[in-house]
Length: 92
Image (cartoon, rainbow, N blue to C red; front, side):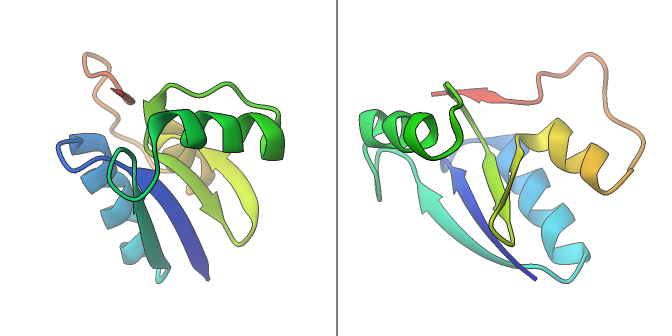
């Protein structure tokens, strides 16, 4: 399995999401917003490709299927233990 994950360097939920993917045997290719792609191009891509308006990272595509953010990934793998007090997406 392969994933593309849009992330930022200072995003703790990106680190968590990448760890979940790797624990499940997924090869992760990261695209850093504001480094590899501009914020505008990032938002435009998700709007055109998936019909989604996104302002947060991570954004994860797993084997060409749009998953969403960290919490969506957790639900995808049916994990438990999400910290209810934490924000699961990181504002750009």
